Length: 307
Image (cartoon, rainbow, N blue to C red; front, side, top):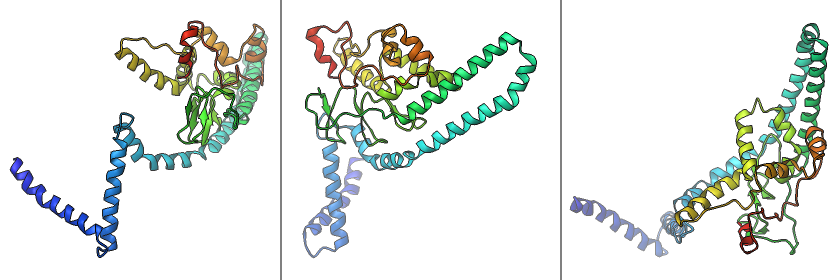
């Protein structure tokens, strides 16, 4: 079997060597010379992808699909405007149907106390949806400041080639780094990150029935003190430390209740009323560039915050 393979591969290797030898000569046709150069360039690219421990099959696949990623990013960048228009149209149509079709039926069938409660709750919910959605789509997600040297940076962005703080990641749709990057939300136009999260809890809680599974999933992430991106990072880090017999602990997990307070921007007891139950354009907790360590982090392990 090996002899047959050598008989088959021998002429092919001989032809390839002849092509390479001809490619070095100036008399070689331009087409053949171009093929030889492309072959050598491909070999260099393949070796660079598998050169050290940072490379591998995942890196090779990412490099191969880079044109696809570029196409998808440039196409879906315009989807945000379409989705925002659809949300406005759907919300307006629901309100119109409620007033034209549902309200006359309610006036004939509901009792006065139930009618008052329905009138109050529905309009309170509508005000929260419109207000917080407008705030969310018009508020920038938060970007690292440029030209400042007094901010603790933990890494360099591979695409921006610029230092970035902890929990900051590059958004391919926004084409820049975003503070506490979670994901790019086309329904909100900007990236879903530090600033919009504190402005639209009432909006997402109001549509919890329509987006039940998504709401539950993000509620779990909020309770853990994680973003969607950090979930994947923490999962890999947990496996890596587990293989060494160590336990991974999320350096941004302040506990379930405190995580929700940070997410909603609640600092005092009255903020549950003024910032959660009532329309509010308050700023989120912290500045998005430095994060206070949780109680379990001691002074000698403060370096864990640079994850």
